[in-house]
Length: 150
Image (cartoon, rainbow, N blue to C red):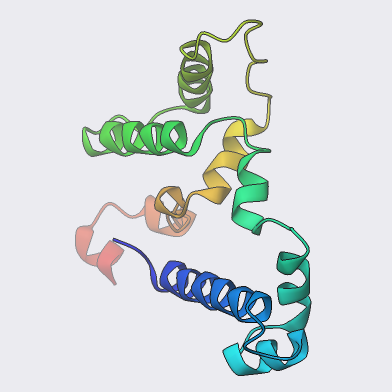
C-alpha cells in the first residue's frame, strides 16, 4: 500500500509532466507561468524540462541492489524476525552478496561493503529498529515482583 508521501510524489510527477507538456504545446507562455499554474517549483520545472531525471531514478542507479532485490531482502529479514530469529548483520550481508552473485554478471559485481547493511537498514522504513529501555540496575536487585512493579 503506498504511503502518503509516495502518493504526493506521484501527484507532483503528474503535475510536472502536465506542465512540461503545456510548455511544449505552447498552452502557456513561459515556464514561470506553468510553475505557478501547476503549483511546482520553477527550478524543478526548469531542470526537468532540461532533461534532468527524478531523484528516485537517479539514486536507484547508485544502489548496489535492484529495487526488486532490496524488497526481497527486506521480506526475508521480516520473515526471519516473525519466526523469532532476528538476523545478524553478517547474515544480511551474506544474503545481499548471494543476491548479487545470482545475477550471473561477468565480471561479478563487488561484494557489499563493511557498512552496507547499516546504510541499507536506514533507507528501509520497514526495518527501523526500536530499542528497548535500559533495565535499571536498582530494579534488578529486587526479587519481589511487587517491589519491581512499583
